Image 1: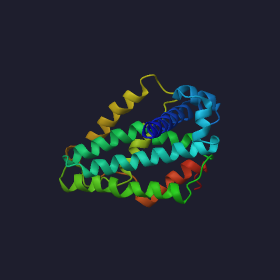
Image 2 (image 1 turned 90 degrees about the horizontal axis):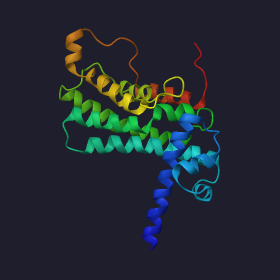
Image 3 (image 1 turned 30 degrees about the horizontal axis):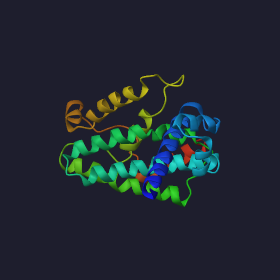
Length: 220
């Protein structure tokens, strides 16, 4: 009985976090929490038992999103898949977590403290491993760098202006497939020449996401 209660509690927590992520992205982080509970299919008392206040829930959403991305990368890296297929699988799972929409939605409401920073940093190694393995197998062009992967996913997970489209999620996955095809060596050989523009390192990527969450503007 206790095991079943724990499983039910975990399930409720997952439902709350998923609902909060969707509502915060589409309607903003100041939406009444009753709407989050209703979307999750739980009572407001259950929501507050798991998250004492709005700040705790927002932090929970950020933590769950970063943890999900790290796990997806680690699982893809650990499986004995063809290297490009592993990278592709990770990219689609990460896109479904909508990190590029979640972080801007929480902009100025949370900060990357030590715990969140460790979660973000823990994602770098497996993502870099997926990219390096695919490049060593000559399945990804050599001029692709780490930052091209997470920033591509983040851009595709942003809502389109006007609160997006009903088909937004499916459209994003369709476009991701097109972008992933552009990582192939064949794309490099067809066009010729290296990729233009800045090559985003892991450190630069962390700097970019810091600013996304803090809501600060770039100063030039």
